[in-house]
Amino acid sequence: MKRKQLSWYKKQDPWLFLFPTIVGLIFFRVGPIISSFLISFTDWDILRDARFLALDNYKELFTSSAFYQVFGNTLAFSFIYVCGVTIFGLLLALLLNQKLKGMKFFRSAFYTPVVTSAVAVGIIWTWILSPKYGILTIVLTKMGLDSPYWLGDPSLALFTVALIQVWKMSGYYMILFLAGLQNIPESLKEAARIDGAGKFKTFTKITLPLLTPTTFFVLSISIIDSFKNFELIYAMTRGGPQNSTNTLVYDVYLNAFVYYRMGYSSALAYVLLFIVGLLTAFNFYGKKRWVQYQY
Amino acid sequence: MNKRIKILVYIPLVLVSIVMIFPFLWMVMNSFNSSANVFSIPPKIVPDLFLKPGMFSNYVSVLGEFNFGRYTLNSFIVAGGSALGQVVTCTLAGFAFAFMDFKGKNIIFATILVTIMVPVQVTIIPEFLLMMKLNWLDTYAPLIVPSVLIGSFGTFMFKEFFESIPKTMIDAGSIDGAGSFRMYFNLYLPQSHAQLATLFIIAFMNNWNDLLRPILYINTEKLQTVTMALTQFQSQYTAKWNLLLTGGVLSIIPLLIIYISLQRFIIQGIASTGTKG
Image (tube, rainbow over all chains, first blue to last red; front, side):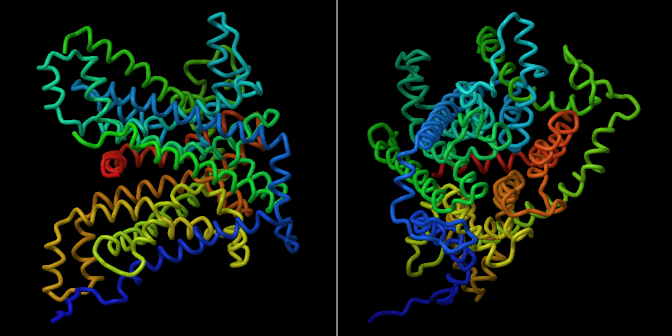
């Protein structure tokens, strides 16, 4: 005999609990993702009716040299960001993972830039790096060095902005690494030490392998995060000089809301989505080659 | 640990702290400079208005003449409203995902997780159109509603947290005949103070710092958020660095106060996403 299971909730309850979430998913996630894909096949300025263009936006995009510059900028920014925050995050976490006085203070200090707005950060650094009155310029000149035009030199501006983003966000990844480090059982390191492993060997043979799940998580988040550079670019360079700091997220904004080319901008947005998806898939696919879950 | 190693750890720690904190200190110091003094070479270590009459004159003019008092209030409304709404949405959804079985549960949850990686630029054009159709342009609604209804991080966090509470609670509650809403509200929410605080703070900060939506949706000067107002100020008054930096200080003070007083919630919240995920 099949017994009817007594349930403590009514059948419609899950849907009531999920109502706001589902409305959000439909109107602000899935719906827009589909419709911007459709918009990418049109010529549309948001006021007049859209005109169907088939693949013309994508053709224009892939034959324009400006696009390749933006594409290259985007990848360069992401590369600097992912490498930068992973390395600095790990180094800072290793420094903080000592039983010494004052670690809480240092942890708070390193995390401070994370909580401040990218706009404020952009303003501070524009001031510090400014070619004549910036404190860094003045200090470098005093030391007899040539201060470069950090934000004015097209070959340097992207690197500068990416580095500032690394400066701003490293503290976040430091916290993730620190949690990972504190999850590694002390007994394992102890065992390695008893077996005669030195500090360096314990680090490379015990700590780093056991940290790989955290490292994987850090890479996943930082890849997604590396494309969120709109605020800083808007506050510091607005894509200039000579388009050298124009990335896909900024170019989507420019084309959509400055030039009112919704179709072309949507095509750009889909290239962006494709890259984020590809990098994320790559990261997940490569996971089993290097991430160790067993102790 | 011997003394030499201790020094080897402390030296880089102090140097990095300076690199992380100095820019903010420099901004604060310059906010006490007069408009002439901000451009002095070499820069003055002690700002010329510091501890003098009129010390806060930059603050007075930024808050008054340049209306930053109003912008700060706007930011509080937008960030506070979004964060409060997100807490409600995410706890409800997290509760359903943790304890209830229903058709399509896995698909909905997977959609939430997968769309985390979709940049806002991919969805912003249709969203803009929707806001236009709803006649919500130039109101707070487009700054609040999307972020209230989309709280992927919070939903995930609360699903994990509710699942970690012993199931016997549910049994005890259902014997008492409590319905699911009472169970959620009277049994589970009161146990989640720390998680509620964490989500509220993180959502508040994200919305406070958002720039794209304000510059797209807000036209009326007095509805601007403080982050947006800063960028407008920056492009209008390129040479008034003392005032711009003062505005910068004002825009981050509320965040710094929240961060300093509630940092254990923030840091634990961030740390837990890493070890559970």
